[in-house]
Image 1 (cartoon, rainbow, N blue to C red):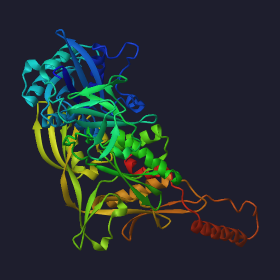
Image 2 (spheres, rainbow, N blue to C red; image 1 turned 90 degrees about the horizontal axis):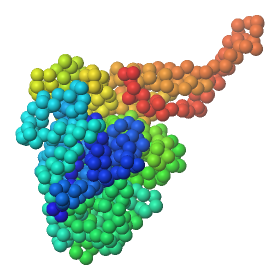
Image 3 (spheres, one colour; image 1 turned 45 degrees about the vertical axis):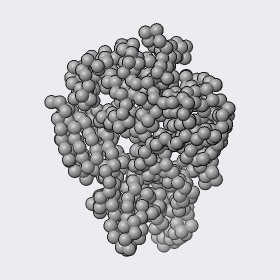
Image 4 (tube, helix red, strand yellow; image 1 turned 60 degrees about the horizontal axis):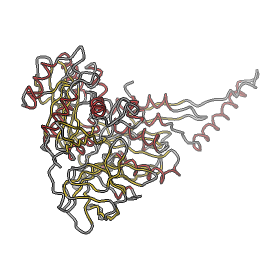
Length: 595
């Protein structure tokens, strides 16, 4: 056990984690030249296309140092704030972490956030200064920032470049000498923590675990503590580039188990695996995930509802931060109300459903969770506009607020403050980290930052500003439900909950946007926005008309009038019978109101 090291790589988005992981795998000969490619561990097409890590990936390496052979278990983690739950799970399975800081960009918000996660689990932190080969690198200044943040020894910061392969040997030496070996007793009752799982259509569910105590042998009967289900360990092994079976695994190691589990809901991330005959205590798993953004996902064909449910279950295995429950909508039929960690997370889930499971889905307008208090003193959780109680029985509404940490260059402080003020934010603090870098702290309503806040922040700061946020609780707010009606019928999938001050502007712009997006029918479509019974905006999609006067040349005006009246009656009848087809773009119109 003293020759095992478990560590993860944490950093802000785009600071070179995956590239550095590639170099470590090449240096230890885990990946042959033939199998080598950029971002080896990012195995999803989506990750490779976007150049971001979505899933944390575990892999085992062998390395000989000073004549002794060591086993290194590496877990590469995502950097985006929307995937921070993946990072927390990886951290729970490790004893140490490589903190990667870009020598050109310095410390950013997500670096600090991930660092605090790691320190909360008492991990040994090894600071690494990456991309030192860049012409814009400022190693000495960034070193000062790292020393200020960590209080570490300046000489202990490793210089590296994932692209050029500089400093890889120093990193491996630091991992072996600084990170403690895992503690645990191979003779104790088995305790293994599940930190990930994946669905394999041939072999059932593959469960990844880290053994804290005890020994697991192939063919033994194991029990999952949380679900109280029992299975045979048909195959156990370690995670190389491909899975390598083993006959037994001891405390301190990271590996996988395949036991023919078919049902996705039988595996819970954070659960403990133990022996059936000699059970160990359950390990305290992870914090429950807190969804930030809620949206409905519906199948385009209502008959595909059960298929969508199965796809969601399989996806949840691979993405434990996705939360969902069934719901129905008058406009869209049966579907699911899903909780996501952010807008990027929602976008990725939708794309994965379409690519990996061939599901065509409609996503409704995203919203956050409000708390509505009725005059009787009851509290109702409002995840969707349709959950909102009747205005006559409503006392007040509370909305979630977040504490946002924005780190930016000093030049962009003014525009960023005005952006946050526009989003109903309150500035709480302003600290100059260096003469040129500022940390701004705001209290902001979560509903305001859900849609396009991150994009606007990046645009204003030319890509320099970084954002990290955490939920701080609920505050009373003057929000109203804005309904959209097409020909007098409410379309619940287009409703939104907005602040009263912005409701008129929002309703007007949404009606105008829908007028562009809805295809013209043979009858007139009235698009109205209303708050309760009060109509606040209206647009009309004109009907397609046939030229009924073409065959009526010459003659009295009354003949033309008669034909037009006849057509008018027909249009009226059509309107009462015809229904409005709503394209998918119309449901997402809210997201593009400013464009």
